[in-house]
Image 1: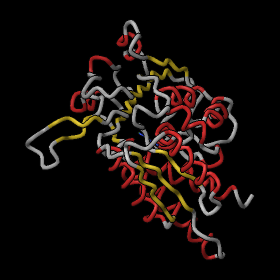
Image 2 (image 1 turned 90 degrees about the vertical axis):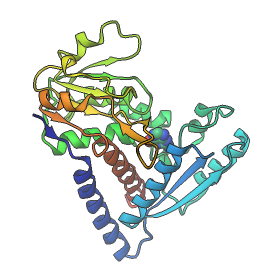
Image 3 (image 1 turned 120 degrees about the vertical axis):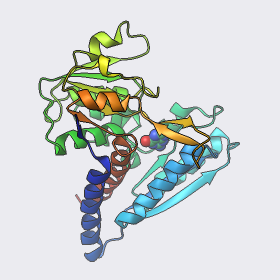
Image 4 (image 1 turned 180 degrees about the vertical axis):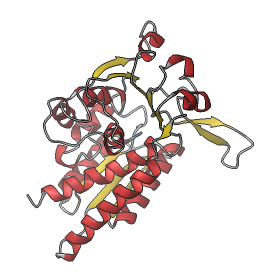
Length: 293
Ligand code: GUN
C-alpha cells in the first residue's frame, strides 16, 4: 500500500504561505502582486484552467485580470496584446493559455513574452536558465512535482528516475530538473517517449516513475518495481454519460493496482494538478518580489 502524495493539502499550505507573504507586503504599503491571463477561444479545459488560476489569485490576495480574445484573432493582434502586457508596469506576470488555435504560431507567441514576466517559464530564456541551473521561472508542473518530493522528504539523489513523455511543458523540463545538482535532483534520469523501444524495461527498474503521457490507466502494476514512487501527471477527460459533467478525469496510472505496489503515489485528481496551480502563484510572487531586490 502506497503513501499518498496529497497535492490538495500541500498546495493549501503553500497558498497560505504566499497569502501571509502578500499580507506583509501590503501592510508595508505596496500594491499586491498582479497576474494576468490571456485566453484565446473557448476550449473547455482551457476555460476551466484559467478560471481556476483567477480564483487562486483571489484566494491569496493577488490582483488578477483576464484578456479574452476570440478564436478568430490574428497572430498580429495577439502579438499586440502581448506587447501591451509586456509594457504594463502594474502587472508582475502573465500567461498565455495553451493550446492556441492552429492558425497561430505558438513559438512566435511564446518568444514574444517578456522573460521577466513569463511566470509559466515557457520562454526559451527561462528554459535555458533552468537547464543551466541559473535562476529563472520554472514551468509550474515540474516545479510543483519537485516541491512535492521535497516537502515529503522523498530522496532523489542517485535514484533512477524514468520520465514518460517529452513535452515542453512537463516531460522534458522534468527530466532536466531531476538531473540538476541538488535535492531534489541529483538523479539518474531516463527520458522515454513514443519511440522508446521497450518502455517496461525502463519503468520496471525505476525508483521513481513520472508519467506525463495522457493515456488513461496506462501504467500498470506489472510495469513498476515494488516500492517505486509514482507521480501521475496525466489528466485526461474520459467521456462518461453517467456523470453530471459528462466526463471524468483519468490519470496515466492504473491507480488501484499501482497503489498496492508503490511506496508513494499521486492521486488524480488531487495530486499534481493543485501543485501546478500553486506554483503559478509562487512564480508570480517571485516576479513581484524581484522588484524589491
Ligand atoms: N495548457 C496546459 N497547461 C498549461 C500551463 O501550465 N500554462 C499554460 N499557459 N497553458 C497550459
